[in-house]
Image 1: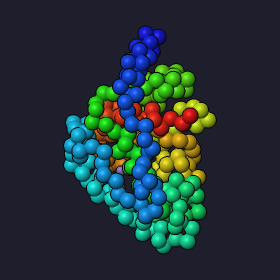
Image 2 (image 1 turned 30 degrees about the vertical axis):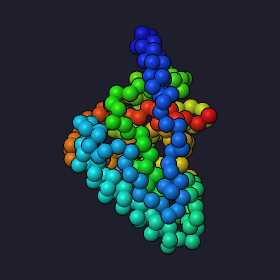
Image 3 (image 1 turned 30 degrees about the horizontal axis):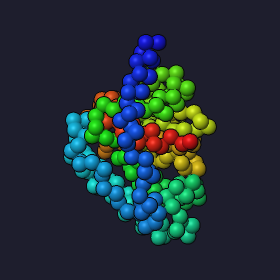
Image 4 (image 1 turned 180 degrees about the vertical axis):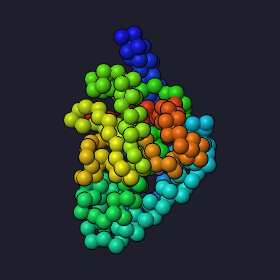
Length: 233
Ligand code: MN3
């Protein structure tokens, strides 16, 4: 009980800072409308140290994410259904599209969102809206963190852990490969407000096989202001 009260108090203290956080749309229009463009990182590649190292960020963003964008644009040009559709429209009909659009479209969306959800301003606290949502859905932030960590750890092979809003509730899920909760074929669908890349390319240089340490590090660099702005309603 005390823990929960402390959490709520901390969340209230954090809200003053969060009011200053950007309320802009998730992505610039050219990221979500074709031809898709490769976004810059919203921070310097070394800014998340020591939690995520500079070299990992350079390769992850500069090589992996860039390849998803390049390959997505190629795959769309070769398809009859895809041209002219926004990224979210593509994800919504992904079961009708070829694997190249599923993998690279998901890859572009997921990474564009992931970078925005990380912040060099370490140790932020969740905002009021998220705190209310987490308490009504999970009872406590610690319980949510435990479930999200479990989703990240239990995803076998490559994939993502998600916190999504579904029917007004906060829900934790995970997806394989570059799938995401906006895809029509996702097991659990909803509006993504937090995600974690658990592909080995996201952590192997620094953490090697220790995914659990990478997941622990993630909590220090969450951009809670961004999470707050993504909650629908
Ligand atoms: Mn990745």
